[in-house]
Length: 143
Figure 1 (cartoon, helix red, strand yellow):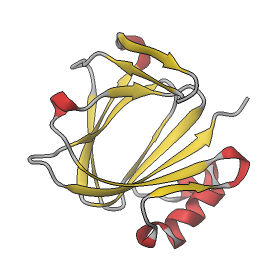
Figure 2 (cartoon, rainbow, N blue to C red):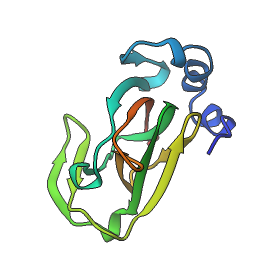
Figure 3 (cartoon, helix red, strand yellow):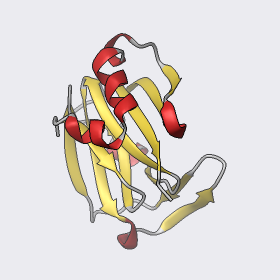
């Protein structure tokens, strides 16, 4: 998905960061308004078997590839088996691998918005391991 207006509607300060700062930003965490933040990441993608399914309760993820490409597998929460119970401090829980997923290929400029019911496995290599620069925006769940 490339329609940045979806990001602007969800979190205007994340939209501003992505449009004006993301490409030149160094890896790290950047605070935004209303409890949201951005994590700029650079890493090597991994084989599917080495990646982990995860989900969050307190934050919506916006994962956007700035350079490179990766697959993010997404599965519904009700189809997954918990592997590691929810860690409230880190706002993450992990799940057993499952083939009932949909793969999304993200290339430069593509993003996914992932809600708490969307179990996701990011960082999966497309054909072979490669370098990726990505922003992960964390937007607090309303309510």
